[in-house]
Image (tube, rainbow, N blue to C red):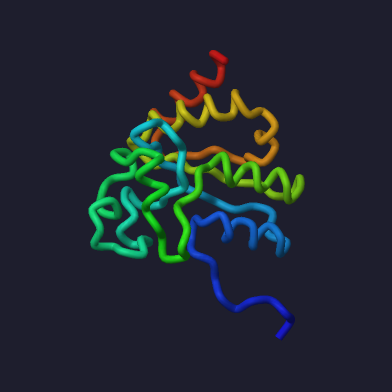
Length: 152
């Protein structure tokens, strides 16, 4: 009725974050996972079975931590695109404006993702303003993240 689409973008997709930020939602939450070749990708589950266009494919049933970026690019989700890298989402937030921010969750047991996140923020300080909160229910992951950030 108000000209806005009633269709909902696929969760953790770049279009979902862009739609939220463009429609006045300032704070969005995402979960990150680390690929085999150490790229941070948005992923709520440990694999993409639930979101894959072809949930029976081998790559959709493979843990994110065992996929390379090349394999991830070849894994099409239900919305017709691949899962976004965290850096892609942060760069989009940077383009949209200063109110576009993320709460980034590191899943328990994913310490390496926290250290990769610290390296990403160190290499790309321009996107740090779009990170409102980094959180985890894993105290050790947060401790490692803090130690890594302090060393940089």
